[in-house]
Image 1 (tube, rainbow, N blue to C red):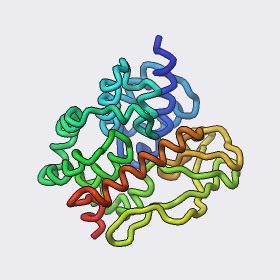
Image 2 (cartoon, rainbow, N blue to C red):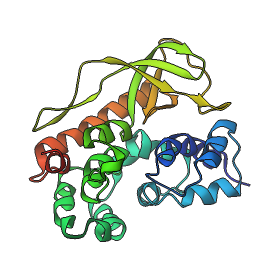
Image 3 (cartoon, rainbow, N blue to C red):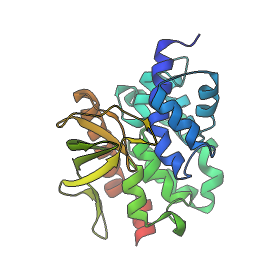
Image 4 (cartoon, helix red, strand yellow):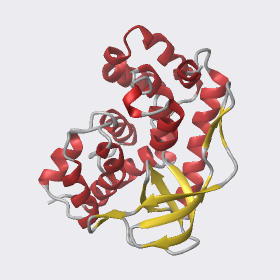
Length: 259
């Protein structure tokens, strides 16, 4: 029987992994099954094996777990650290992180590997924001024209926060700050309204939130409600990565791709 922290972690993983999987970014082509798991909350050995096949998050989860002395990479504390951020990220050994990146992404980065590694000495942590801003540009995911414009991809794939202003069945209207690009820097623009899915075809990743709730967004989906602590952490680690991307590296990946 799985530990309850692992059960909770796998439930969270399914909810946050579904939106990019739906678009073919990560994991096997089985998004329907992942949506069913994310909606039902059922956790079984098949979900565990499915989650392990997500090669993007897996290196970060195993690193966070090993650094914290946590036995299972799908422990809820570890899963939360990767998607939203928490203090487990602050104890990561830089050399261990560098080795993990080498093992996981050097082959895909190819000749761009040295530019990806520029961020390592500048305080990066194994948070999803690093994967989006620090890895995606160097492994080709922002240059595949069939996926959309680079800024659109970065905006959709980052985990962002928004406050619910209206609900209507499967849809939720939230006020959130979009990612902006001024030709040199990425930043967060003024709040605007956007509509996100919370359910489709009778499957809901989250129950209907209340007006005023803070929620986490991944691509066009609401993946969960945010506690005050989670909201603070998500803002902090997102800002940390934006600062590194904008200020610390000689060759920022997004700048190279967007020109």
